[in-house]
Length: 178
Image (cartoon, rainbow, N blue to C red; front, side, top):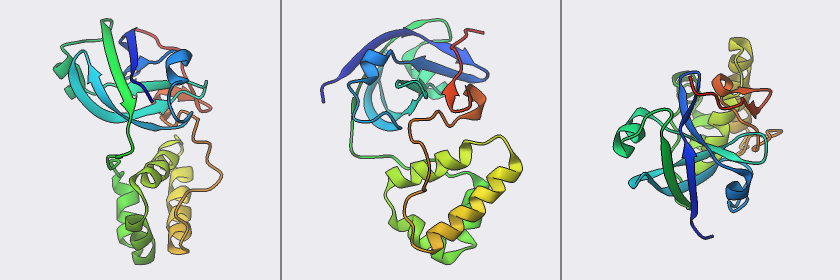
């Protein structure tokens, strides 16, 4: 895959700053789902995931460290140059999921034996709900599935946007500069 170069305006949805890739740029990625990439944002090196937007494209969550390194702020036009990479970084595991896994040795053993890409899917599945009850049920189900040796979450649409703060029904909200 060749590098993807996008010039876009940094936008904000809620507390999230993001770069939304055009569909044409996302078409060059290997998946409609979450994709690990490395490259630069305004020349500053990055290695992170591009999240699916639920509309056959992707978006980059630009954290405060990336903003500072890129010398940019919401509303600025930035240059994103990335290419897909196979070396996945570990996802940040939410405290409630981590505690449940550590309390379930068989589940935790399977978790540790999966790939970082599979762990990203489990974390994204947990993150994809606003409901505390649904999240608790998913964590219990994840522990059961992992305890049984299941390495990937089932019935999960990897092309949905799983960040409730920026999506509705798995689709990224329209970018709005706030």
